[in-house]
Length: 234
Image 1 (cartoon, helix red, strand yellow):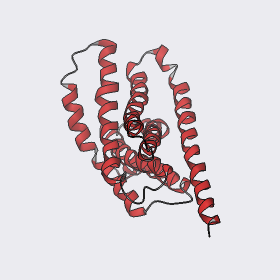
Image 2: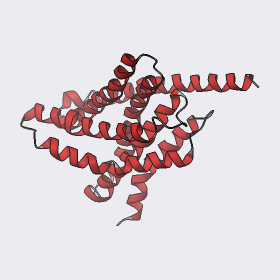
Image 3: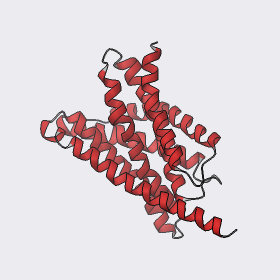
Image 4: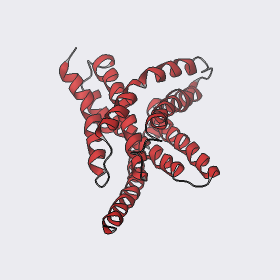
């Protein structure tokens, strides 16, 4: 096994995880819990592979419908469902989840754990002979998983801190549906190999960054404000 390829595969996920950790400046999450969520996200590749295999059995379509089913249902649904389940089961009700920014942090760690293992599968095993794959996935694929997770965490936090049960359920649905939609569009554009659609890829990437950084910035400002308010009480 090529150690250099493993390093190339794991570096983007670890770097982005560190970036999110440093972003959470005012009420940092316990490192042991972040590592746990990251590792569980990594292990989530196993149920995802099983669910993807089962869902692929029902793909009776051809052409662009075949690609759409694969992008939105096989990949988008199964991956976002399981990554979200890690957060719901192991972080959502944890006492350390005490502000809205935390939802994003935990969702990102779960997703980056998954993305890191997926990256190893592609770079070390499937495309070890293609040197450009590592660069392409470091620039696009791994950050995309993080961006889908920011949306997921944004709505998970809205659900957690909603006092209205209907709104809570609504936000919980959005925490799954919107990441699936974003993930599906991302995969569909790439899988289609359609020149007209591929023209939209870079604009879509720009949209993903803009759309999700606004959400991250909103909760970052709330975290900063909450921290200052707590300081002023003493």
